[in-house]
Image 1 (spheres, rainbow, N blue to C red):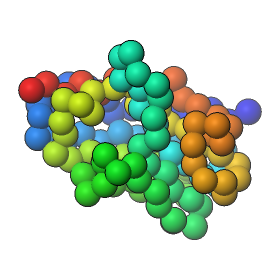
Image 2: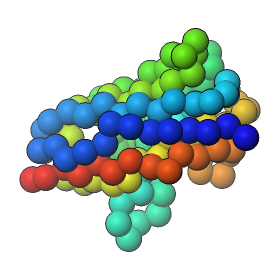
Image 3: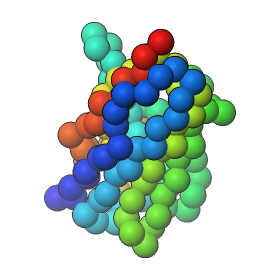
Image 4: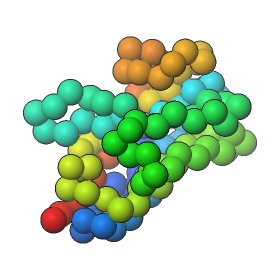
Length: 119
């Protein structure tokens, strides 16, 4: 069982930046970030494969950047130009396969970290 622990959430003003980090206890092929806003379903944000292939949701392209450190088993999400609609609990997730990242293909989940963007 792989453990994922997120950090870096908090309160930020619109237009600001925040960096989330996730530490994994084991090596996994795909690492990803999802988010869930109040009253909404969990949605995909970004993912990165072991070979550095990246995926982004259209809503965050150009504003968010995912990166990972395979040696230290970490994945980060740099979030810039934040908007109030980015407010959500952000979850780190990981998969042992290279299947297209979605909530259904992730094998492991962190407990989440809250990001609040004020207007």
